[in-house]
Image (cartoon, rainbow, N blue to C red; front, side, top):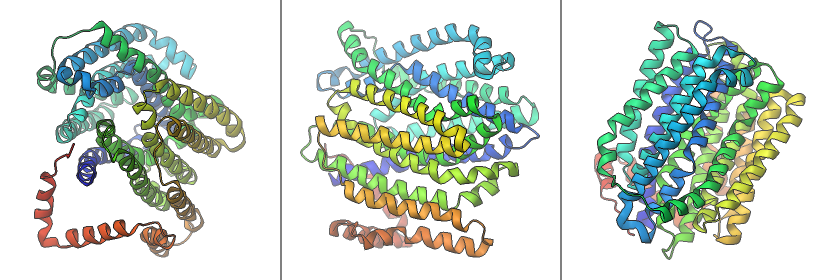
Length: 505
């Protein structure tokens, strides 16, 4: 199991570097997006709605195919036909994406009226639809790279896309003054070029194949996940749609700004862990120590997540002042700790839901996420009129907790895993105290404020030690890690040692 954990860490770091680059690009663009020379605060609110609309479209076009490909790719009965399975998934996704675009592009004006109560955004919605369709195709190829543990290729190609999209976005907004249309035109071009760039890799890993029986089985497995994916996206975006309906675009803009800050946690940590561990979680189903492996994945990922949450929450005020192009966005600081905490439960859900995937109980996932989405909608309707963006943030936190707990409860029923919930609870409440303490000291002068916040963050691992969080073997591993990597002269050799890690499956 130790080798598998090392592989997980190595791939997570590689994916993490790519995802960190995504956030660097995002942070580079936030000052542009929040500068009134290029976008008004209402335009930023519209951008937030367009971005979540793209997420809904991408989830709808995916049709559960990435998950079905993941499950069938490593199935014992089909290991010799992986190229055929991939070809069938990719061709199906391409057809679905084309049909969606042909249906929705002519309706872009109607969609603009429906979402914004005016037809002004029909052209930009057309670009959103096209970008989502191309991205859906791209996601199948990205899934294959993950299944083959091609983390370096995955990261390099996506970094190339990011740099290209960043350059085009800056060109279209700053020099061409294209506003919102420029943002999504850059995405259409970037996604299209990546599809072409990976064409050779795609063809190399494809074999002309179609089997009705397998296709039917994959769709039976994937259809509940399609509903789950759409509902999961709805669960993550219903807050901003609700604000768009119940409040001003200004509040949508403030909430979107806070969400962009906290989304760094999901992208860099949750998504990196999911990308690296997703295939391995499935591959390890039949190994003797699989359940202990799953348990430790949840504990260690929660540890990393809460440390990052504490860091983002403690320094949210300083981060906001640096990157916001308009002082009006500083008001978003109050909800950053709340939204950050919701990501903690997103991470826990991503790990614990694998019990239902392993047991092939995808219908339960669909029911859970639909239920959580309904609850989120109800909470937003109840709390936004009372507390505005704070109410929406609280609704997001509560709904993500309910989503995780339901996944955990039903996963344990069909595939029990001895998760260390007591430790995770200790971890959570220690992190909550540190994160929300920032709101009490933001009024202090800069130097004492930074000293206190830095001290709090550094103290987090030691506070957990006082609660007997670490096992003796973990303390020993931490000491070994420190001794190994603290020797600067051996840094190059230590990096090279990572290349020799190979799976023991």
